[in-house]
Length: 110
Image (spheres, one colour):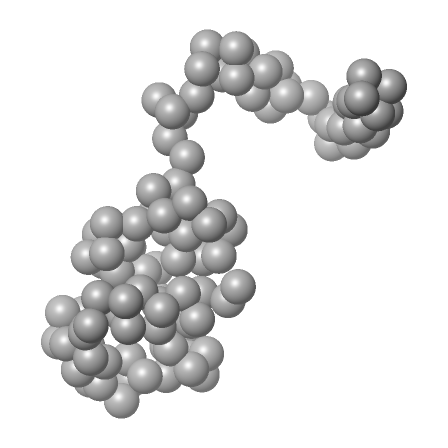
């Protein structure tokens, strides 16, 4: 989902108008409408402001996750944190190989 659809949905879900959000962001309703229509890129500072306003993560606004809070490292178990730390140390090639091996192992286990 594109970010402009997300910010429109968030605004509509909170029963706000484009003018309400434009005022909060310090812009005009016409310019804010361009963000929602995908006709203008939203500046990073304004994306941050919207994330704070709606109490959602930037990843959610960007459409990278459907989890409104995003994923904080504190949400991970110790085992998940250890796996993530290990995976971060792998090269892109190693990550690709590990991913394929895990898929094959999971099929065997099923």
